[in-house]
Structure formats: C-alpha cells, structure tokens
Amino acid sequence: MKKAIIIGASSGIGKGISLELLKKNYKIGISARREGRLNDIKKMNPENVIIKAFDSSTEKNDILLDYFIKKLEGVDLIIYCSGIGIINKELDYNKEKKVNNLNVSGFTQVITHAYNYFVKKGSGHIVNISSIASEIGNGIAPSYNASKAFQANYLQGLRFKSSKLKLPIFLTDVRPGFVDTDILMGNKDKLLWVAPLDKACKQIADGIDRKSKVLYITRRWKIISLVIKILPESILLKFF
Image (cartoon, rainbow, N blue to C red):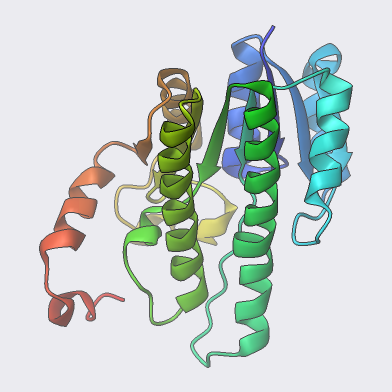
C-alpha cells in the first residue's frame, strides 16, 4: 500500500486530492487547522486516514512530517496544499507577512524536510499546489503571486538537484487556474474557465501517477501560460 502526507487537506483541492488518493488505495496522513473537517474525511475510511490538526504557518512543520512518517511507517508521497492569498491594495506589510509565512516559510520548511527524508530513503515524490499566478505579478495581491513564483522556482531547483544526485526523487508543480472552491468567494460566474473541484482533483491525481513535472489544471490553462509569456508588460498591466 502506498502512503502519502497531505498538508492542508481540510477543504478544497487538498480535501479533493485526499479523497482521490483513498480511491487509489493509499494510506494517508492529513493535516490542517480545522480538526473537525479532518475528522469528516477520516470517517469515510478510518483505517487508512491519520489526522493531526496543525497550522503550517508556524516553524514546526518538521515535527508534523516526522509524526506522520512514524505513524505511517514511512511515506512515498508528500503534498503541500496549504496556501493563502490576500487582496492588499493598500500594501499593508502585515498582510504580506501573513501570506509569506504560509506560502514561503511554511512551504520551504515542509519541502526541505520532505526532500531530505527522500534523499535518505533513496526515492520519493513531492507535490506542491501552486497556481497559474506563479507566472505573473499582481498589483492587488503582490505577495500571493510572488510567493507562488518562489514555490515554482524552488521545485525546479530541486529537480535539478535530484538529477545531479541521480536519485528518483520526483517534484510536481501543480498550477491550477480557477477551481470551484471557497477561495473564489462567490465570484465563480465572473471568472474564466472555472473547473469543477472533482474534475480538477482527478486530473491532479492522474498527474501525480504520471509524475508530471509541471501540471496545468485544467489543461487549457497552459494556453494562458503561453499568452503570458509572449504579451508585453504594457498589455499585461491592464489586467493585473
């Protein structure tokens, strides 16, 4: 039986991926701040779900991972789904710091600890749920897009590192566009190409199976990625 850890699994994409992995006969360890929601997932398959309530914006993610690794008796896959974005038109530093605490500091601690564990093990797979936002700046939420760019660049660096080490440690950068979750805050009808949550999570789970390097969800968002790369900033700034 394969074993996975999902950080940020109480709702949205994190919960959806957890359910997809259970369908694929994984045993999973899941964490998030809201213990009640974690318990709802555990009730669906109590023998194969281990839960721990945890805030990944703290500096104790190594303890969390070690807890799950011990409980699961080893792990093959570690997924980081925790993330936050805050509209910050006034550029309040405290809002930027809150985003970076989770999207940069929490992310880095999870990924480095996971990577070093897999180096010792000799193999493994790390997945991060980033965003198409990683490919462009954003004037009203600067830290969100910048932190997602940090994540994408960091995973690419670790792919280079794995190649030099000649170790089968796979790193998958998932870049969703709009997915029908609470983060849309009721704006679903105003947005482009909003994917149903179940469709998005199935595509992510299938991409994990393929060990994709970069995964656009849904696939049509790769078109937006190409457009972003060729349009001049003078045009892009009208949208961001």
